[in-house]
Length: 178
Image 1 (cartoon, rainbow, N blue to C red):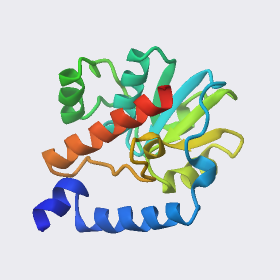
Image 2: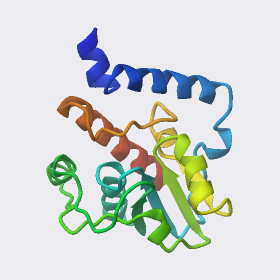
Image 3: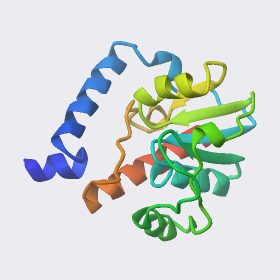
Image 4: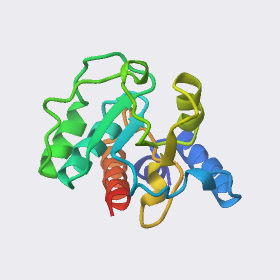
């Protein structure tokens, strides 16, 4: 049982977060941020916490699909490389994160026609507090085949869970770009 929890949710705390946000999603709490239409958005801006695992992969994949894309982090310094596991995962998908450098949201230039795609529901509030409420926001996981409101941060998790999260990120990007 523990192995299943760590491979699918990262940790017991991750399982609880997933269940909490899944329940809120079923109650409609995230409806306004679910599958937001990206057609009229010039650029997709992927946001996560550290801008080293999820959002750089999303940016690179969206660009490979022909979309203008960028990424930044809510709680990161600037000019750090992507996580080595993210770089390896991306390379196995035919993508490169070699030139990626972290950017904090406070140092990022947002445009009025951006679609801001966050990985976790709590990042909606954090983004709005740090940057403002005038931007169109969406939850990445709601674009997956089986929509979820929460794509966990895989940074300190097992390799199996890291891969699971990065696959979820790629699935969500395919959905946004479809």
